[in-house]
Amino acid sequence: MNISIREMKESDLDRIMEIEKNTFTPPWSREAFLLELKKNLLAKYIVGLIDGEVVGYGGIWLIIDEGHITNIAVEERYRGLGVGDRIVGGLINLCKDRGLKAITLEVRKSNVIARSLYKKHGFVERGIRPNYYVDNNEDAIIMWKAIEY
Image 1 (cartoon, rainbow, N blue to C red):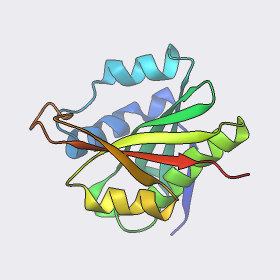
Image 2 (cartoon, helix red, strand yellow):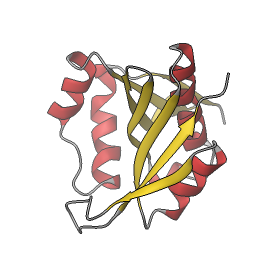
Image 3 (cartoon, rainbow, N blue to C red):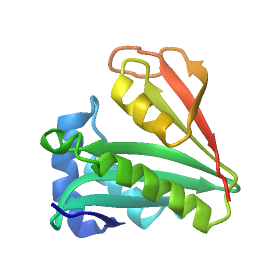
Image 4 (cartoon, rainbow, N blue to C red):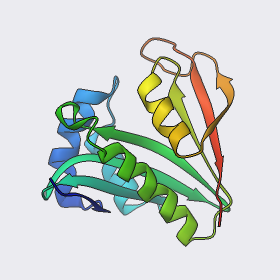
């Protein structure tokens, strides 16, 4: 099994939408991803692949001296194999390549697996956004990481 990452392409969107719809409530629309890929000059998206097949993705906005992770998802049957780990590492490397100082993100309070993954990469919990998620008013945990050079 060969895990790799690369920049997301528009041709990946059919696969991305399958993963998105099976992962998030509410899911992002195809149009939202197209805007991110084509119009948002601050956005960078990567995909995680196993043996060349797209099985996950992650996005980040590169704003001044800070990165903000927008979303990360791995298809359920491929979770626990290291794809999410590679995607988070790839997003951190995008920030390092641009000389950024920190990375932030929001994650559901109940998403213990994701919080653990982020902690493994040096993120710390720094606050709460009450009622952040529109589907169930769940709180978001704000996580932050200083980038080390």
